[in-house]
Amino acid sequence: MEIALENVWHSYDGETYVLRNISLRFRSPGTYLLIGPNGAGKTTLLKIVSFIIRPSRGRVLVDGASFWDLDNASRDSIRGSIVYVHDKPILVRGTVKFNVELGLRLKKRVDESIVEYYITRYGLKELENKSVNRLSAGQAKTVSIVRALVTEPTVLVLDEPFTYLDSTRSTLLIEDIMRIVRERGGMVLIATHYMYRELKALATEFVEIVNGEISSHAKNVFANS
Amino acid sequence: MAESIFSITIRSLYVSSVASLLAFIAATLLSLVASQLTRRRAEMVLSFFESLVGVPTTVIGLLVYMLLFPGGPLGFLRILYTPYAIIIGEFFVALPMAFTTMFRHFYSLRDSVRELVLSLGEPEKHVPRLLLRELTPILVSSYLTSFSRAIGELGVALIVGGGIEGYTNVLTTAIAIQTSIGNYEYAIWIGLILILITIAITFAVKIVGEYILWR
Image (tube, rainbow over all chains, first blue to last red; front, side, top):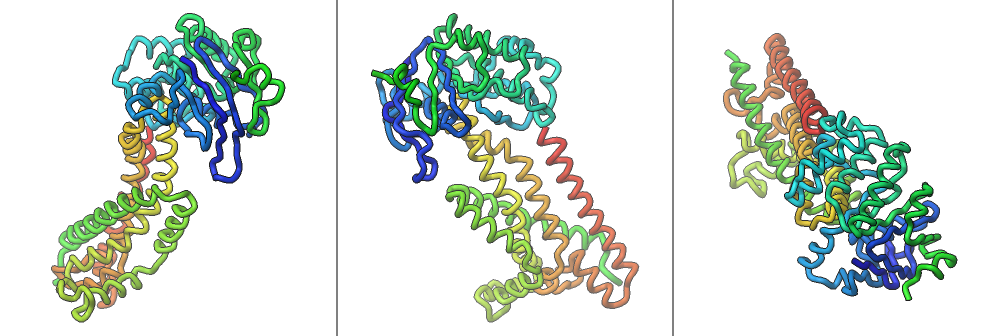
């Protein structure tokens, strides 16, 4: 899969643009790291790539086709292969297990063995019947990451995934990212402040965003041409 | 011989539960419509209803009386001094409470549930079902809170119901009437019943909202 942003601009209020003239291309398999200060526009960019937000201007191309000009059925089909994990986890009321299974429940294909595998792998086994209201920030973050992993997405988009995660879980996540890219030929986009050595080695490209624009240094390397 | 406390209680429960159910349905529909507004306009609608929560029930009773008295716009219905008149009055008492308790959550949850569904790669058609699931505790507590407000009000019940024994006498009017004629013991018993109902509702809201549905 290839996702390309073509001269993308975005504003939430119609006045201030949080993204300005962004042109980027992401291809499978690959790992893309987005770096930049707080408020630079990383989250908005990731949400546009994940088709959660429609950009104010510009086009989002999926294998050459403009996503927002496609019919609903085609859009839903493409959207089904992409999962985005929020910086601040959005959990629904219920147990840890219910939340982990949510994506699969919506897809109507709950696979207990995969759920069990990831719950155990990320140390959530003892918490699986606990209400998500009683989780620590790190546990809630882990639940939202595991919820994405169990759906086995082709494209995984992670917004600050290492915030609140302990080193053990961070290492596990990096291993899973490597598996998605190397074994399944998928694509992972990550906005992060934590630059782990393994992650650096894994990265296909770095994209630096400052004030809603690709920084000049990164632009030379990454702008589609 | 005064009317039995049991029959007054049953009438009170009936009138208030019908009024608060109607208010709850109206508040849900209003919330659905208002949730389509921009955040700024939605805040304005919310502020308007928040200010209505504080309107004295005697004023609401007076306005409903003006609607229903024989020369009023709805006088032809001939329902003044009937339980239906109290239901209409209590509907207006309960509506702002029902709306304000549900709308703020309604608005913020709608956005976050939509984001969640899309972030999981699912189409928007899944949003209403998941939103309803998330809203259930809020809807339950909204209904119970508006019921609590309706059953505890006096102004409307007295002005448009008249406290007619065996017909429109509810717990609050019974307390007022019995106290005015010096039947304090009877009034105290009715008061205790009203307090018990209010406490039971408060506990129900707490248990339903925090311990069962939020788990």
